[in-house]
Length: 238
Image (cartoon, rainbow, N blue to C red; front, top):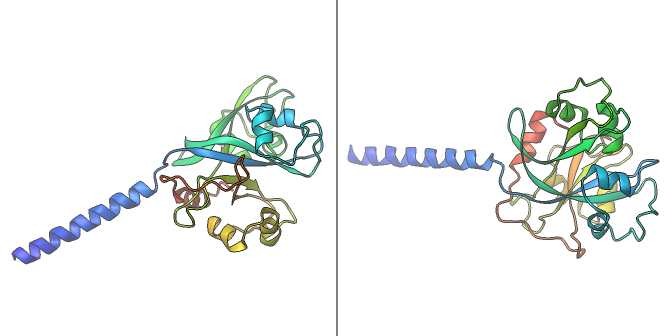
């Protein structure tokens, strides 16, 4: 009987420990620097990007060595915009992201802000969730909006070698091969960081390891976890 009680006690301790670890893995831990891949549509410029992401030219150009003059950028290129990635509270759960503040200047709609101003780095659904306006109404000039952009701090389950990640909106015509070639990274690595994602869908986001201002891949911070990937896929934020 004593042996049975001891076994039962050990069993319940293991179950409790497992539940604690599982619960902790779903929590939003820490913060990191992240990058937003901004697709330069016709008319976009670094002044718009600077204002939309509440940053400055120096921060942007530090992560984009291909830009020698911020007044001379090319339509169709992508610019990596640095921002702070931390915990945001959603309607159902916390997730990793950053809440930008945007002041409407032309009576934008949510759709125009998501697809054009923020170059598909946020979504109509996310804007509706974090603001009080109707999805189809025009936003008054000088109205301030919350603009959430999701991000990644990496995953120990995949690799400890990468700790800076680019939030990359997928575009029509792209696929796993073309994105991996452009990033100069193995296809399998991108698949491991983006499980279940169709790289050929032409919409949604993927997370790609990025280089810092020294042009190196910084390693993963100790508290980073990949828990939020499952949350994002399950909630269909993409």
